[in-house]
Length: 77
Image 1 (cartoon, rainbow, N blue to C red):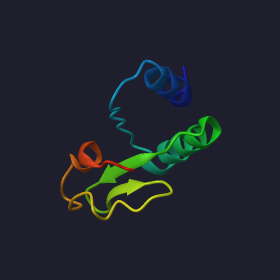
Image 2: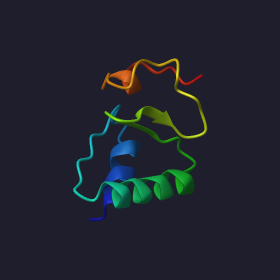
Image 3: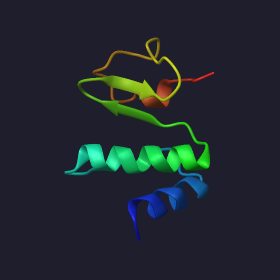
């Protein structure tokens, strides 16, 4: 089963958050971004360097980049 298939299955099962760990960070993000575009989903990512990033939206008000719960707290409206 591909990453896209697993991710789509988890999203349709209403998982509130999904942790993906990969040694090929850029490739994984590209595959996830393609799936989100195809399904018309918004993609939110967090990493220690960039902080919270939400596709198509500014997340500057969420919290600092060092806070891994920024994505959970982000309202997005």
